[in-house]
Length: 219
Image (cartoon, rainbow, N blue to C red; front, top):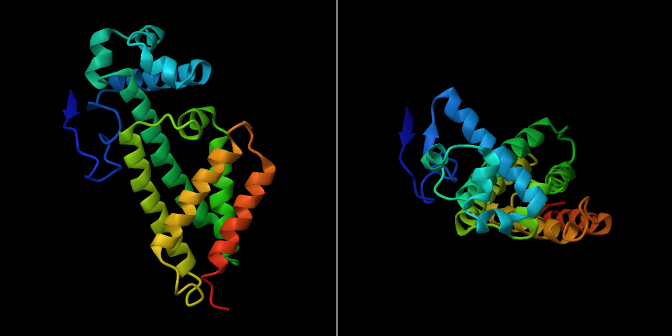
């Protein structure tokens, strides 16, 4: 049994069907199969690259060993499999960053910057992230999901800064969104040629965000 329905991106962005699935696998066997397809796709993207996976209608199907009927019951195309991979990573990022913010000591506002930069750096060391985000192999659907997720992250970041109220009374969610978008672009720059990230660029990113937020602090 499956739950079918495909929401638009304008709906709640983290709806289970907002990524690449045609329907939600409810049976354990179906969930295992879907996860196997996703794991195989991640390996192929790492080994062969995004373009090789989406260019061939049979490469991923053959690699999974899943029947054609089972595959297409949950994914329209190999590209939608990669959409689902990216979608799950986006959801994980939001959850992990929220947890990281919650666990910080909280004595200095600069810890917020450290949490953001440290998480983005570690995330970009994942091969799948570099292939999709650094090389900009993102479909329009995933780009829209990413934008909506950044809006949530901006709201989260803003709430964290407001804990130091009234020091950051001038700071707005828009300012936080600008910072996160900038950090994402800087990570693309830092990891463009270096799988572990260029330390100098990462250092500049940390400095730039710290300076940027400091401008909103009432001293």
